[in-house]
Image (cartoon, rainbow, N blue to C red; front, side, top):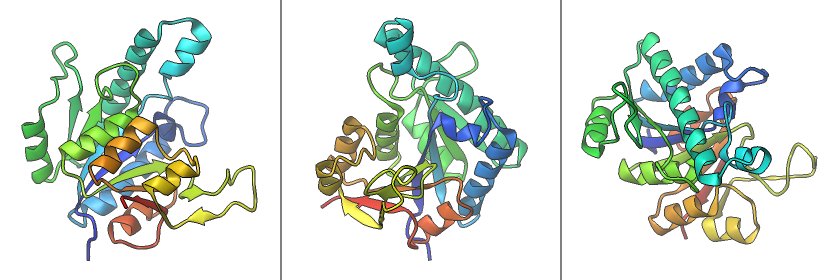
Length: 238
């Protein structure tokens, strides 16, 4: 029995790298597609927000290269577009219909975002991929994920990372760190756990959109999440 029938999956650009030093690891992309296909086969409707950090990170460009922050963020948004095109074509080549929606139009090949069209695509069982973040500088793709998750009336926002949940400390540095199975938004903020940026966190909390943090690299993790099994960490309103 499905617990969540419509999800927004937030992927970082770095997730497409896997363990490789290349910007994109084809085997990793294929693995991610397989995880998404598992939930599609269950009848789950899937939206994806993809970051661009494997190509360019706006904050880093602003800090290290002297690029004005607004311009650096624009470059980061364009990086998400490249990842979105990659994901769309990869889904299509695997027989999965996918549609790309950008926060801003790009030339003649990517139209601007249209919510009505997006919802129709979801209802038809297509994967919808959101790129360009919010379309404005000074917002991260976490904020873009919160925004699109609310616009598509998602049952859950899944932040898929390299770690299988939210821990009391960095599990890579502290062997005694323990994973939370669930905690409230207020608890996550009070403990300064850094699940998402504060703008995204506030948007989710104010609009009752729960967040699940899990590993995209753990086989079957997405499937277990949508079935309501004990996977990752649930950050809930209340």
